Length: 72
Image (cartoon, rainbow, N blue to C red; front, side):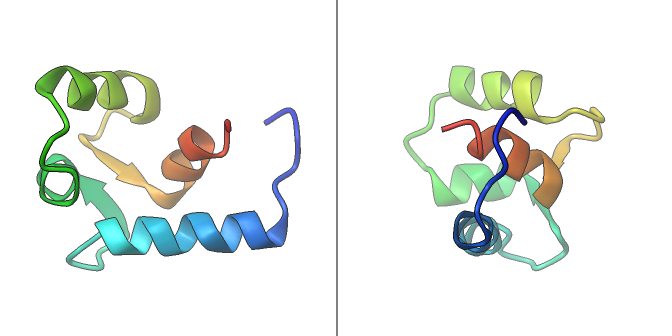
């Protein structure tokens, strides 16, 4: 990342991640994304997979989530 995230921003991203990670296993799956964002179109899910799922394991780790969300 070009800029370091503040501790406050990191804590906020972690809270957001945990709210989506409904089973608490430390990963966000497609099913959890769809449950949390029911209006997200299939194209949106596919784009998230393409951009954020760096290790291509079919789920997002906290690190991947921060990398994606921390861009803003």
